[in-house]
Image (cartoon, rainbow over all chains, first blue to last red; front, side):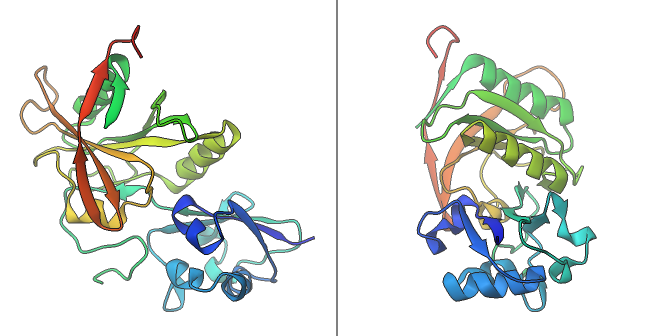
Length: 104
Length: 143
């Protein structure tokens, strides 16, 4: 058994078009490291510094990880991780990019 | 080009007028790969702001799971600008994360909550590049 990671459309360029890939690890952070080793470049689209990017939502078994310990959230075999970029915007002029540091 | 039926068009406009002066937002889902916007899904603007919108993270997950189960995708992602034109802002462009979607913008700056025409325009936003496209509205029988 492994951990199923659901990949959003915009990140499928890293997974050869796959909607879901499998990962391993005891925490979300380890799963992302494991993803990075199989799909280089993907980690940078999810993490900024030592935290998840502001406009990237990650859920473990349907729970938003912002409320369960962030990157330290524990995961185990059979769990499902879902990655979804925020659907957001608006006329406020700010230099933001969903996958880049705020201000970048 | 975006092809949309009159009822869906009217639903987007009505939602934008109702939520004015806050920005309204939502999705029109359709069968994956079909480019047909069929299922109107108004979303709550969790930011409740006249200058920003964001789907609530819980609603977002529910929406995507539902679309996944139905083999649907977000054919249209719409939102309103309430004091500026119906053109993607720098924020809209930076945060656009659905390369296959038509991004529809409605401006309610002319008439607010009242009756009256609104500006509704559609764009593709891919890798930070905005391309406006024609919007064709069909009556329900033709759609």
